[in-house]
Image 1 (tube, rainbow, N blue to C red):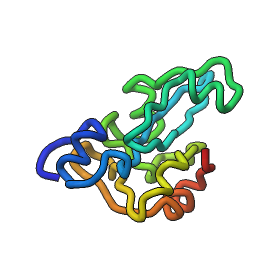
Image 2 (image 1 turned 45 degrees about the horizontal axis):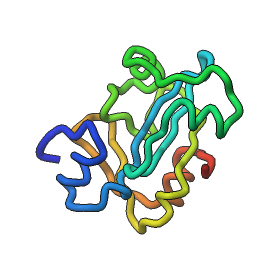
Image 3 (image 1 turned 135 degrees about the vertical axis):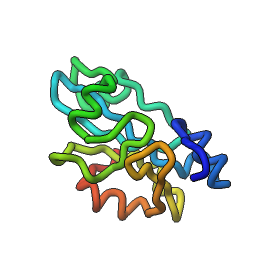
Image 4 (image 1 turned 90 degrees about the vertical axis):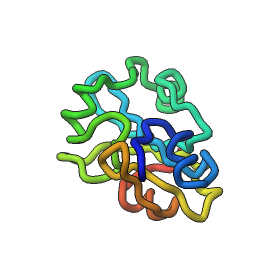
Length: 128
């Protein structure tokens, strides 16, 4: 993209698409374990929502150092793949509404198009 897009709204604006077709990559720290949650740009993935969904008490949004350690990437550009080790992943079912979704590609100014089914496949994710 021509400019860094650290938010779904900025990425959607640059791509000329609906914000819901942006697949946000959110990293959470679940009592020291890493978790990737891919949400539609229309949704907010809060630690409380994710903890309730999974029945986990100690859930918090990961800090930049935790994200970099477990993904090798910086917040604002975390790709759903390419991490040093596999990360458990949940994928928002709202993304299935779009024939094409866009995910970060490892840097805040890079994205790639994919489909919901492909996002589930490449991440070994669970629909949620």
